[in-house]
Image 1 (cartoon, rainbow, N blue to C red):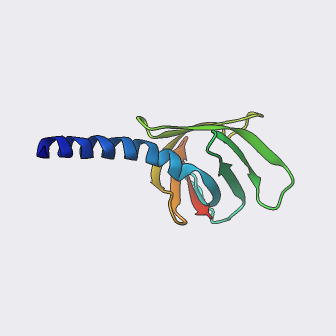
Image 2 (cartoon, rainbow, N blue to C red):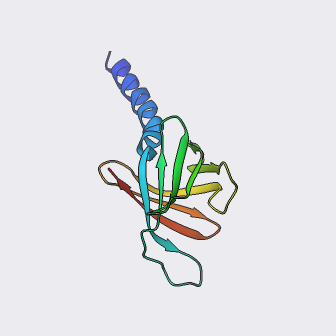
Amino acid sequence: MKKFISSLFILFSIGFTSCFAQVDIVGRWEVFRTEKPNQQTKFKREKYFVFRKDGTFIGGKINSDKIKYGTWRYLETTKYLLIKGDEEDKDDGYWKVESLHGLLGGNMVLMKDSVFVHLKKIN
């Protein structure tokens, strides 16, 4: 019985954590820092993304009328976030999720082409 309960707990933990990251990403995120190679780090809140549960997102520049629409998907096995806008731009593609603490005003760090983007979850 002890082995069964232990096995059940392990299976539950694995299943819970695999869907947990996907849930952590859902919500509104604002870019607050950008680090590019050989350039000064930029501390500025100017872009946002709202990742929805259904795998779609909206985003754009804060205080701008232009809105970007698209889809997103978190690839648990590789820890990549795939972003694909309706209109292709530099934000599209596979972003490595370097860090993700999505609950209660969390932070996420994404990396693509040696550029690190730091996002803050806005509740």
